[in-house]
Amino acid sequence: MRYFFIVAIVLSQCSFILAQDKKNEIQIGVWNISFLDKNHFKLVVPIPPVLHYSRKIDSRFSLFGEYSYFELKYPAFDRLRERDEVEIRILHFTRVGMKLLKKNKGNANLGAKLGLAYRHGGELVHLKYNLTQFGDPWESVSTFYYFSSLGASIELEMKYLFWQNCSVGANFGGTYFFAKRSPKLLNLGLFLGYEF
Image (cartoon, rainbow, N blue to C red; front, side):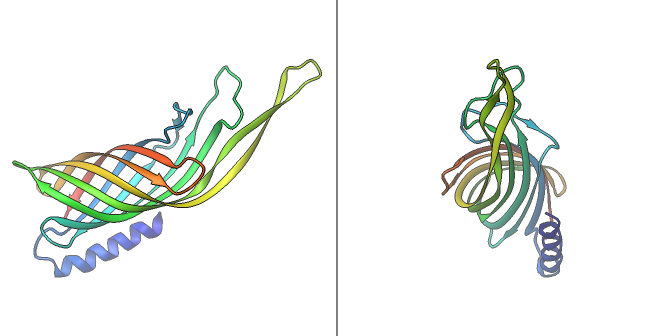
């Protein structure tokens, strides 16, 4: 994450020297994500930031790169876990691609993003309970599945320029990973952006 931020700063400073128009944008935001499986409620601590850098290549198209780190916990509360139920997901998420911008009336913009996504990390999955001699659950047995997979993503972005070069916006999208475990990901996010 630190390296992505350093590279984004260096690229933006180099391109700032050559740019006559606002061609660069940095966004920082938060995502709420779902893997479209039976594990719906999750506890996200800390709130995962999403870092986004984009560079215009003409008036309508931009290239972008994104990075985020997620640590999602699925508490069981007062029930026993089912077999193959996810307890924790840890995920590094990187995405690169192209963004199509559509300027609407005033300071509102609508855009669509197409990209390639890469994730690595894994998930802690419940296997079974060891029982006491009386048949009560005593100990949970879990395993950690590692994954590293590529995927394709599509996303819609709505942005409003509210003060000079600062913007606020929301995005909604989906990613499909070419993997056996947890291949589908939906995201809904809010962000603040700065154009220069």
